[in-house]
Amino acid sequence: MKEEIRQKFCELIGKERVLFEEPMSRHTTFRIGGPAEVFLIPESYGQIQKILKLCREEKIPFFILGNGSNLLVSDSGYRGAIIQMDRNMGEIRLEGNEIHACAGALLSSIAAAAKKASLTGFEFAGGIPGTLGGAVMMNAGAYGGEMKDVLKEVTVMNAEGDIIVLPADKLEMGYRTSIIKTAGYLVLEAVISLEKGREEEIQAKMKELADRRIEKQPLEYPSAGSTFKRPEGYFAGKLIMDSGLGGYRIGGAQVSEKHCGFVINAGGATAKDVVELMDHIIATVKEKFGVTLEPEVRFLGDFNRR
Image (tube, rainbow, N blue to C red; front, side):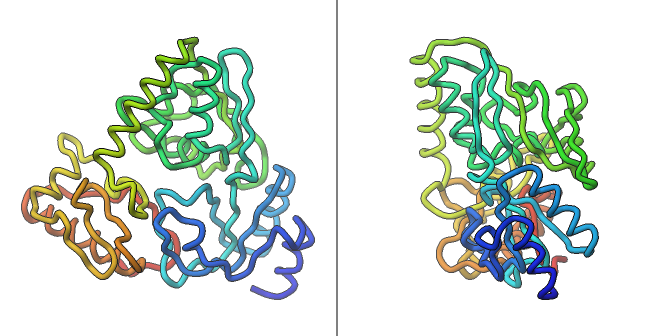
């Protein structure tokens, strides 16, 4: 990236909000990833618009980052701009039975705000390790609940920097997809519509789900969450377990023995380790059961996959 373009980013949002060659291992829940050419931490929608305009003009690839869950960044990093929307864009406010939250708000923080306000319906999301923006884009779900069940509307920005409000019935939300993903929109904020409940009952439900996660998921290790999507009619974790791959390891990447649907960073894993392990899992499950697993993890950077 040319020095004058680097300077333009600094002028747009302030040099204290621009990092160069920033290790992405610091910004992903996998704790894996090489350097981002430029890492940007905007503090307003106006700054995001200016960043996107510069990226378009200079033909700079960009990626919107939340808290780095559900993401594997290559060992060589990312040649382009990473635009972070995490705590810098994490405002949450209550209006009656609705929660208005910015894209960088953690799902756990939204669930805590809902509980405090005695609003029920968001308990399922309290333990999902991600931000609202990514959860809306992917229609995140757990324990029988999905984002599409609670969304009223979403405010997005398109590639040209225009801001659009999409009502829930226009989001085309399906299993781990939405129009936001297919159209390449950037989530800015969303309105979540809930129902009045009893705080103690909401707390009990959240505790029950948290206990189930602790019991069944390898939360003590870095990971990107569920590694593969659920194949129709099957469970990915069970297929992997029944293939005899529980605990299978390549380098520092390992199939969790606690839940075979998770690939974990057991210590010093590289992106290459993870990709080789995922490819081995896919090939083994295909050979044994005739089912092709599809990654739920998103890949960012250069990967040489089969």
